[in-house]
Length: 313
Ligand code: NDP
Image (cartoon, rainbow, N blue to C red; front, side):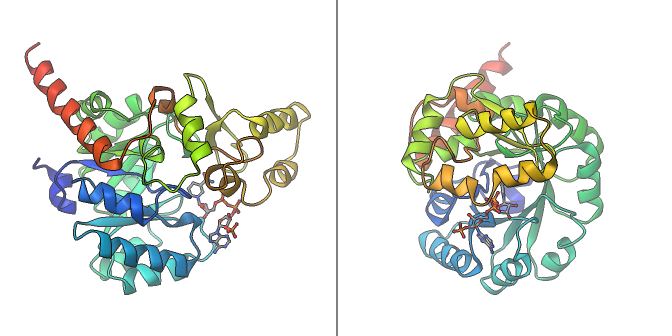
């Protein structure tokens, strides 16, 4: 396909795999890139030298473009940025922070910069900061989420109306039909997370992948808005948070309850009770674990089939 995003990244299909802590390492990123989409290494759960190793392995596993996602809450962000530059990474997706902070520096090194946003206001701020494209992520998405609870169906057309740079839709997209809907609403591409969590190449623990496959409609909730809003599966840990809310817990008490490395415990170590299981609402539609290549193929073929069908209506 030829469109602004395919040309910007040099990819075949406008299908981007989200950078996801504990799930998207070099194996998943290179598999998606080799399948014609854009694979992303999620650096938020990697110590700097681990990130370097993943970038090097990804370069060895694919000669297609790939990207690194850097959440700006990460404690050693300067080290990550330095490694990204040293290793010659060509595309960076920044998230959870001010786009003015790193865009200029990355672009000075010839890097294509994308910023993840959850509102029109933040999309315009990113455009003003000089990013090459924006990911607009709606309320349905898993993991860290915006505060305004704007759904993808409302967010994409509103961002599209104001933005001139390419727009990538995220949140609630796992199939070709959903991709088509996002493109009709004005997106140039889609970013998909949850569906790739259950890919064979994802580094998520098998327990977590199976839990996502079993998840039905209503299985997830957005919570912990006082810290950083996060969508997760309703398990024992989620119920503990609810109990804390019922007792009017303070922010410090919520922080203490969250503790450290909850996400690692749930998604990487497979503790389904005490861990944080970050996934989108679309998990209710995901019913099998598949190779990343098959996921890209299935989404793309359904997109083309339904686009043709729509044109005959
Ligand atoms: P926590 O503070 O609960 O835990 C930190 C986790 O990150 C640990 O599991 C640790 O691994 C790992 N880690 C990797 N590099 C470092 C480092 N330099 N210093 C400390 N810990 C490191 O945070 P979260 O798990 O919630 O988030 C970790 C990072 O991922 C943050 O930067 C966050 O912004 C980002 N992120 C979080 C999302 C979320 O929804 N929670 C979503 C997207 C990004 P170990 O236990 O092996 O030491």
